[in-house]
Image (cartoon, rainbow, N blue to C red; front, side, top):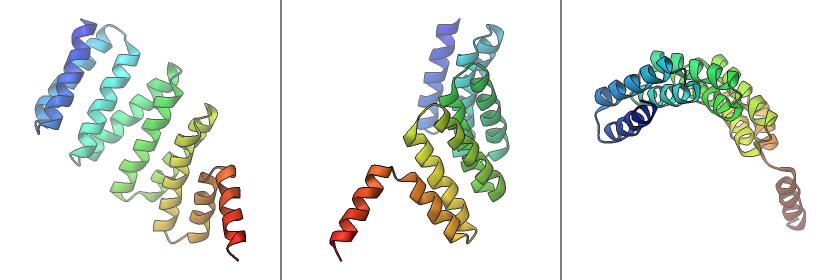
Length: 168
């Protein structure tokens, strides 16, 4: 039963890649039904993320928002902070596309905090850049630059400063 659900997710990904989003979503739904029935929360998170990605790629933002929210909350509940943070960052991407910059910024900020919680410097840096992009879009260039600077690791910042100091 659970193995078959995993196969449904993989088959759904293939259908999404070959241009059959309806078939892909049907398989994702079947997998999620099994995961819900068997109380397999990590599997359900995977299904929700696959479905959310599919809807986002198809421009259908409402179900994408709902599924990323559900996946993020469930992932946090089961202790998978990494996936929860990624879902929050993806929520930011959806909000950005819908034009809700405040929600996008808040989602990126929440993602960054979760990435920092687990020491994921790359994820935190990506969230900082995304949050900076929102500020830049709003014309808040000083805030954007500060976030971009925070995304650069200190050793890299020091190296850049030294290179520019030698260039003078």
